[in-house]
Length: 406
Ligand code: HEM
Image (tube, rainbow, N blue to C red; front, top):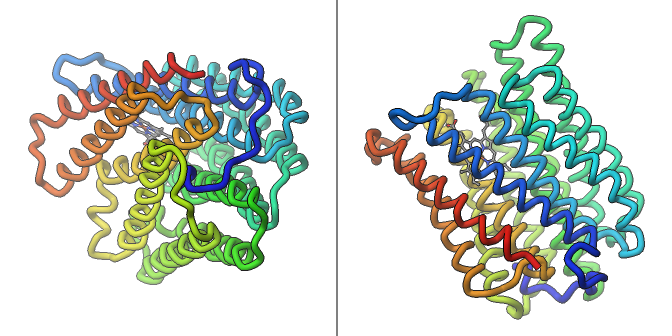
């Protein structure tokens, strides 16, 4: 998809470390490898004779490193490259360093104390830096009205997502750690990310790329209509995160309406992009298409999951994990790699394409195993070994990508 867009203005600075956007992407990839290795550890711990770990604590380390080290830094890099004028990019360096200290702190403390004083302090530090980043980006960005609307929604969702983790401390202090309220606070954080910050930011960045060819009034209107439907959908689909509690029928209806609203918004967003030229790197086109297909699949699955008969399947742990990774790997990671190739942060070579292919095939195998098991198709005894092998393949595929960045 991104390859089909007009070219962006060149990123100033040739040396890899001279450009803050490129430097942020390097860090993002490094943290991604760390998150993938933690994924391997989680899977290995479920093998007979595998390492015995405090699973929940390492799970927090994995998800925080992936969210804040990989995705946040990746978005930070794209935001600088796409929205912020070259001469202002260096102003973000100190903020970026604070965020890396926070991610390192979380990686070092979550495994040992789970949600404890030090890990909460580091995640609060990151949250504070994210608030400053959002303010600064909103002040500095150069986006036309369609992209600006989506960027604004993304930043609002980013700020709102902080309410989830902030509620955890008071809930735990009130002895509600095992209550639905505690789980809902975590789900709210995930929801505000995968139905808000992530899609709105990616939509804004692609709209921005189309704007460089001149803003077309009809497309601008489509972008703003898309925002309205998607924003309504983002609010309503929080109902989906409550379906596991067996709520009354109207909550299912709200969840379904939210999914449908997001689908309508997605179609308007595609219309806002206008006719696509079909030029550009084949690898970028393939990754962009993968991201789009996974996004469409996510929206369809989300809408379908509001059907009460599907509630037991939608609430199955394996299906939840597969759904989350469909978004994180299929939608977000594919889009981030597409941008990295497009902006020249990753070399487009046969070996890079091979690594990307191995990564996404292994991710697809992992998804199929999880969903197949939930549906009763895959056999349970081979499952831990096969899931672990898929995680190892994903981590190994990332190693050369970390090493070959330009
Ligand atoms: C690089 C490949 C990745 C691998 C191998 C991997 C592996 C895993 C594993 C094994 C689990 C635990 C599943 C369970 O307990 O049933 C998990 C959970 C999770 N992962 Fe990943 N993951 C990867 C990438 C990502 C990315 C990119 C993100 C986010 C941006 C992410 C976010 C999460 C979240 C939020 C959970 C659930 C945490 C919870 O239930 O509290 N993962 N992942």
